[in-house]
Length: 243
Length: 243
Image 1 (cartoon, chains in turn purple, yellow):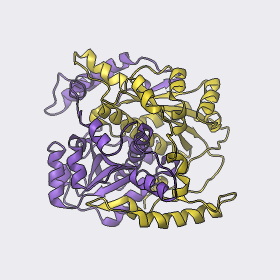
Image 2 (tube, rainbow over the protein chains, first blue to last red; image 1 turned 45 degrees about the horizontal axis):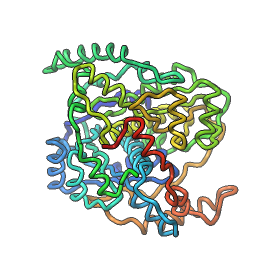
Image 3 (spheres, rainbow over the protein chains, first blue to last red; image 1 turned 30 degrees about the vertical axis):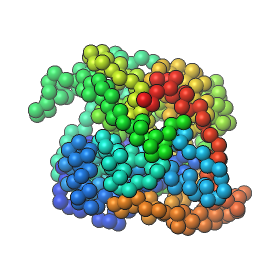
């Protein structure tokens, strides 16, 4: 196992940060590393908002569900899927541009995620810790207003970055045999059961952990209600109509 | 710039491969590195189909638009957004599961992309080359049938992996100042114009390159028609109704 793979496998979300600030030149370097990720047909369908205003940081921390580290991390970035730039660039060359296709939502969301993951890895390679903030989709319209996002741009997730002030465990993952399938999709419920046992042990051993829970049980809040039911209407209003 | 950031910044798609095969243990290690990526609420909403059958490789190469390297690379993976595993796991614990939310499509697609990008970086750190294959979305139903994907699973993209037999240039990216914005979204069309000039020079200097094109002009085929207009109906049929 080389040192890069070792780095990848040591990822854990960091939510407590020291006061040390990330130098601006390093932040730029992380974004450049992000941009080097593969991008569908070179479209580079993303923008990153570096939220510096402390009042906005506090507000986003609230809007994301009381995630205080959004305000306390050295830096907070909002990764946006951006179809405004490429469609307008194409229009300026005279193309009759079609917008709002489902395919375009996928391309922009995937492009943004590939880019962000490079930023995450670059950050961790420099000893920084990061935490993705999907919670910005709790209130995506308010976040969009705050960051003055135009049409055809939507906030996919945020990311806290800073120097770690704690050292959480690396969380176990599903067995690789469940994820990687040969030639055809196959049922993996038995491997999930094995993983549930492992996760129950893991949670039981953690200080203050719930000894009765496991992976499957922990998924309840994701699926037992229409979580973020506003996303459809929100995206449509932003010009991602999913045609 | 540390060696990991150097690696990230040296990415280029590889489409010609030597005959050397990736050892199976290394492939497993790449997938494990992928699984270590951040995942929304630990949901791990992805599966990877390792397409080994040579006839299926040939067929997918065709279905993806005649991308022969799908068949000639050492290995070909199809990265699938998988909401079947977590929703069924949640159901087995007694939860009343809601499916088909737009939010769930985003979570699964982003989870899959973060995971795949870790696989890509792990591969490149071992001297392998990779190429994402978005072209599998040209014929996503045929691909899904071929790989026997069940409902609530959809193929997001493929990835060719192997030992590089060519050394393409690293393709320039938009200026970092266009991507990274401070506090608010701002117009970047002037920076796009600068980038278009740089790309025109880049294409002009490439052997057989079109000296008249640039970034904006190259985007035309993405936007001047309803590219992959089937995606909406395809996803709906797979149980990703975008509610």
